[in-house]
Length: 311
Image (tube, rainbow, N blue to C red; front, side, top):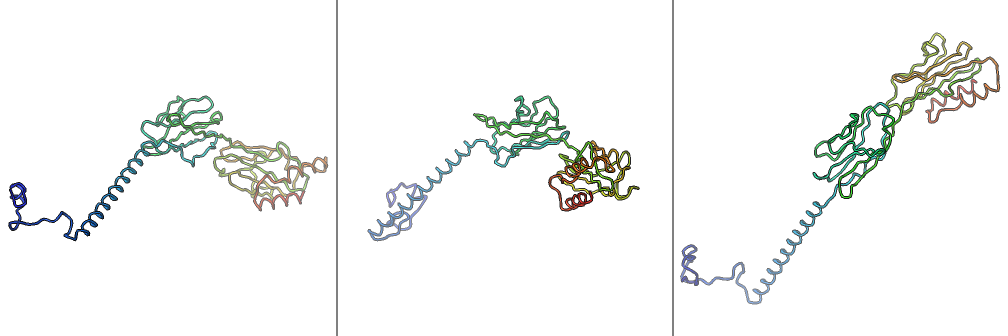
């Protein structure tokens, strides 16, 4: 037996100096009896508090982990409900899904016949104009439609294979570029008045680079031999071109064509009259030639005012 009553192996491993040593309780200084009890209570209280805090933190981490595991895929709130595509061009429909799991796929369904077009990154339809696009770790699931046709207009559904299935519907609008000359097919003007032919290009994927006016087979521009020719254009989502001819002459009668680049031309027949049917001419002048086409700029307003005053 050792001096403290422990086994001899402990004494050999941890020898004590002196014959007998009185050990004080571990981690406590030698204090008075009352101070001892107070210190012990404080230590126990701190220990219990830290243990409870650790348990609460562990429980919170567990609940947070469980919530993450239970989180279901959901659609992004910024997704568009309507898309516009130009006839013959490419349409792109995008579905944004967050928290997608490996066992949950995202599909595109065509609304008019409920045909499955894509599942995940795979294209299921035999129509090769349709294509599924998805980058790994991306939240975007895209349906691409090449060479858009009129029949492609309609609703499409983005689906997540949850239980129950979650869907988000979008509508694809297909528009066709149009070219129109206001007042066509026939416009009547008085001799010596100003001729104003207005050509409007709508629904083009981008403003045409050039718009050429023809009188018969002759190009009309400010350098035309006729003289008194002006062309004013305003480009944007809707492009407008004005052909202005001063001092209308009977030789100006005939077919005029407005031909935007890479589009079909629009045509109108102009009649320059020398006092014939004044009532009809006045009606056409007020209803066709003096009505501005919707939203125009200040310069276009000046053009219209000048035209109406001179007629």
